[in-house]
Image (cartoon, rainbow, N blue to C red; front, side):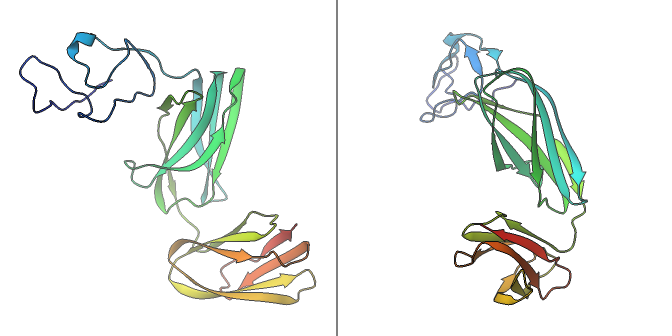
Length: 234
């Protein structure tokens, strides 16, 4: 592990080296001995990592599912006071953002299996890593899993399904266009429609269904490349 620090402008040769600036504290995602304090000088001695997280990550892998989805799978062992997992995604391998949070077991002596399905990966390279967080807020990262995906030209997904009030429709389009969406009941009667200007790439819009009676419904569109999807209204 390498810690890079900037020398404070007020420091003289052989004096204090201020870690992470003069105002912000230094935050480590693991235990260190002795404890590191903000602006600590070299009098603190050598910092030794004593533990990373109270779990063992046995494996972290990714596989294609349905041609253009990514199924992530990881196995842990010996979890103690584990809090959660943040699944982080990047399109360039440098800048990551969380796309899902899953609760950890907390306490587990044996192996535990976890899964997350990324339904809308990007065209080309997709990079994934796990941020493993314990109940005290300490964390560490897994290795990076890289997947190259050839995305289907058009795709639509509804969630939540079954739906109670508000339906989210996620559309993947290859161009900007206006699409008419039609809502049919179980008797094939059209009961509502919505015109949406979708943008190239992944696009999401909401459809309020609170007034519908419970039952089965279908959504079709004016774009023949988008499949008809079944909606269950609670």
